[in-house]
Image (cartoon, rainbow, N blue to C red; front, side, top):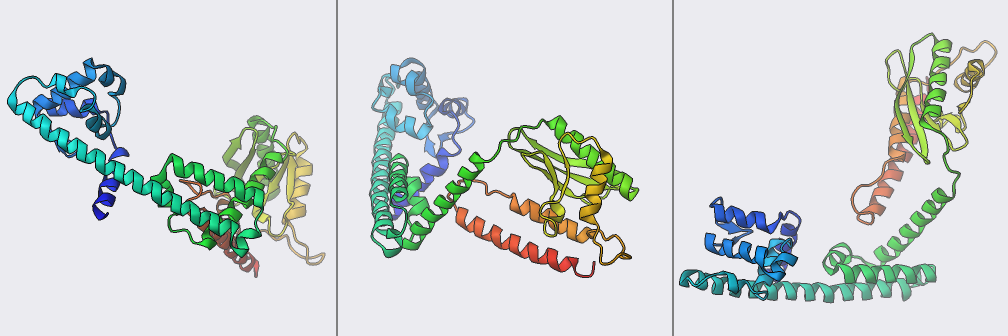
Length: 357
């Protein structure tokens, strides 16, 4: 069993970095190497493989397969007709054929083992989601669809399925269903929300107008930077002040066309500075004053968000929008939990940073 696992893992790692078999064989013929993926071949045997690829019906059809698959199949598909009559190469052919047979046997045993293990993992999932107290509380229709999806995955790629789910406990299966249900609800909300219909130019014009308003108000050079635009989805940008990035705020453009300064979202969740299509810079300046000025009494000075607070707001925005790379289900729950903790911690840091500003 230990040997089977090692060989199966070796085959998997090779498949991830294979190049065309004919190129590998040509390297042997040229004398650049004497082996292909660990299998020693003479120049004559490598040439026999190339001739078989080029001239036989099966070779032409399956010649682009990875070498390990080509090697184990070629002995059943007429390779012997291309080796010639030399005793030395015939002896080599016999040795390689025996090796190919053993490789096929081990691969088949490995596949059978993965299929058997995948079936047992599926049984664990069914038990966790339909027979435990917590599992019975889940949406039955969703659980049915989920288990059918798991079954398809297990049949399509038993090895990957076993690797991803073999160590799942009852709690893990239940949590995975709850996580997927929550994600689907979020995606449904995203799909049902109002579409973003504004052009990149319209967004740029609004951003430039906000920057001009800040320049006029604070007597600084305000510039738009880090503009992000996704057609049909949304847009965002930052504004610098006298070269200091983010000092002028971080902005999202809503599907309604409202330009919101999210950098002061903790204090003013609805800090709308402008709308797409606005032309009146004086009105935008009034909006900015309304959200960025805090009056303690009539004589109180105008207070601005500190650089430290705005930097924390910027970091929070990056964390909120962060997405996990790689396979969606692999450590997805762990990623989201860590992300939520980070957002809560940043909220606390932002609150503390404002004290005494």
